[in-house]
Structure formats: C-alpha cells, structure tokens
Image 1 (cartoon, rainbow, N blue to C red):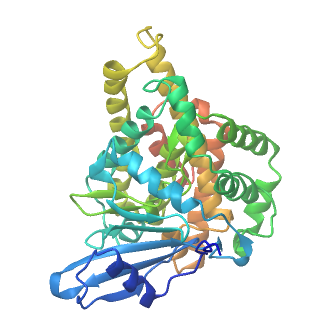
Image 2 (image 1 turned 180 degrees about the vertical axis):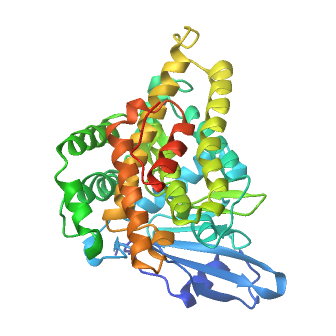
Length: 402
C-alpha cells in the first residue's frame, strides 16, 4: 500500500500556531497568540506572537483562488513558491530591503517569514500623512540592484534564461495584463467606476490615440524579458518607518521590462500626492524625483563595475538604456494610474476623500496625468517633468511639455 501525498488545506489560526511550534520557531510550551491580518486580494496572512518574549512571525498562505473575487476565479498555488524564491533572490543583492524567510512549503503554499509589524504599510502611512524620508532612496537602490543583477548586463545569457524559466509566472502575468493594461481602458464588467466619473471614463474608453499607445505598452510588458521584476511594487507592497524599508509580496515576480516596477512605484506615490492638500504634497513629489535619481546613480555604478556586455563601454549606450527604461516607466505609470482610477483596485487614499466634488476632481486630474503619461511618454526626459505635469493638472492647466 503506497502512502498518499499530502493535499492542500487552508490554515486556521489554530493550525497556524501548531505549524509554528512544529517548525520549532517557538518553544513547545510558549503561549502564542495568532490573528489573521490579511487584507489583500489573494492570500491569508497570520501573525503569530509570543507576548512574553516580545517576538513574532508571519505565516502567509496562498489560496487556490482570487480571494477578493472568490472560488469562481481559481488561481495557481505556485505563486507562493514564486514569492519565496523571489525574496530569497532579492536577498542576495539587497538583504536589508526584504524580510527574512524561515520556511516554505509548496504543497500547502505556505511561506513563513520575519514579522515586520514594527513597520507600517507605506500605503496606509501615506494616507495618514506620513512621509518616510528615506523611502525613495531605499526603493531606488532596491530597484537598481535587483534589476541590474538579473539583466543581460550582469548575467551570461544561459544563466539568465534559466532564471527566467524559474520565474515563469503566466497566471499572475495574465492578471496584470487584464487588470492593469486592458480592462480599465474598456467598459468591462470588473471595473468599478462611480457614477460621477462615468462621463470621463467613457471619454477614455473611446480615445483611439490612447488605446493604441496602451496596446503598445501591453505588448512591451508581455514581450520584453529584461530583468526579474517584483511585478506588483505599489505602496501596499512596502513596509517602512522613517529609518527602514522592506519590500514584500513579490508573488507576481517574472522576467519583464525594467521600467515596470519603477513605473508602479511612481504611479502610486503620485496618486497619494494628488490625494493630499497642496501643503502636504512636496515630500511625496520628492520621492517621485529621488527614486529615479537614486536608481540612475546606482544602476550607472553597477554598469561601470560589473557589466558583462561587450558593448557596455560604447559611449552613449548607458544613456540610451536609461532613457529607454525611463520612457517605459512613464508609460507603465500611466497604465497603473488608469487601473487605480477606473479598474477594480482603487487608490485608497483617493477613495477616502469624502466630499464628492473634491474626489471627482482628484480622479479627473489623475486620469489626465495617466493619459498623458501613456500617450506622450517619449516626451518625458526626467522625473521633474512628471512633477510639473502634476502641478499643471491640479491648477486646471493643460499639460505642456518643455
């Protein structure tokens, strides 16, 4: 008689505590407390603490469906393996910016990791007025080091191809293709458009110039396997304090265009800036310019010191690559803005604006920015121009490129 293989079973708070003790992450007689704290779209997250020792862990378990939608949308459990392996890979280059992984179980889609509860989710902190002075410096370095290290400029072609196969992630890429690039630009049933915004949405859905450029961006996302991406680097995927930053949740990790992660961070930070009153906006606008400046400085240093590409020393090649990355980042930022305004998952700090007319104005301004970033991405040469475009739309002016 052969022994049957274990099958998937969702954790409860009780079984999560039992797992922590089985893994000997706490003493057998430790008095533990467990709470399910997940508020995301896909997974369950348990925080287990031992109050007497003032320590804890996080157990994350992928569900076999999209949590925000339900069992009618099945989803691969392999994303848990993708996430844990991506965190381990990022830790080879920037261990200070990712949580430590203690244990993984691919059968039960479980990842056990460092408890980051001493930090705050950046999206939540920004909505309450925090500014995180080192955020863009840390994220710029995280992006430059992880993206360069997994690109053709740092890896031999065969090694890169093998790593890309390891992070083959078609189901979650399809979610991005649909919910970031496609559905928000069509009158799709999954969109969540408030009635006051409907006329603006209909203009977007009928804008043939916009749709053509959005189609090109989607094709770039699908076909340009330039580096290992986080794949979902918005402000809800980052924990931070004034001194520390940790990137989490890379279950969407795959080989894609370098500008994508950069664009997502810029877009979500920009949306938080739009949601604020003018007096509280400058700190976030700084992050939009600084993240690119830090990325360029770090990426350029790595280029000079560790490039394996024969053409790397050719004058102008680095500048060409950086401009290509920036143009992609601007376009992808536009796509992400459209997703957050017209799609299924909105920007929470904008949704928290109670006064209807104010909220509508912010969304209208965001849509104008998103459209311009997509259609005119080649006209943006530096991040200062992104800030200038925001300042123009909030004053009611048309975006002028100088």
